[in-house]
Image (cartoon, rainbow, N blue to C red; front, side):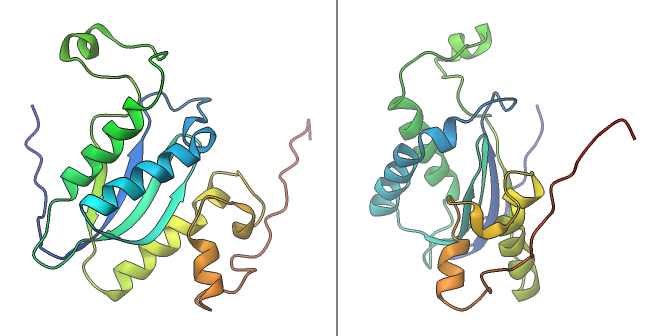
Length: 176
């Protein structure tokens, strides 16, 4: 079993990528966006954290999160978000024998990617990455067209212009 090393810095800021187990063709997160929002809200009420940047895509999400001073337990928050979301869904997903034996649902990948933000430039790179992600995945032609993102709050605050990253023209593939 791998020996995961995590940086636990009280009051730190992290970038996360959290994936559904079944990624191909899965739109669960945007289909159940209100449930996800409610779950995050409930966890934030019990275990505060600041959402610096967030984007929800059909089968994964990215987040830049800051914990309160003296608190480094981001694992607790992700466990509660993932389990709360899963528990509220009907049990219709395929589960492997391993997951059945462990009493686990087949909604989320077990692990997530986390990166401790080290300085202002690192912070800005990760916030930009969060916001450009729907464009990167070809879900929209303009960043502003993706509704499940904190990008819109950044535009309202004057951090980004509404046309940040411009317009990506559709790629036409033919026999050429």
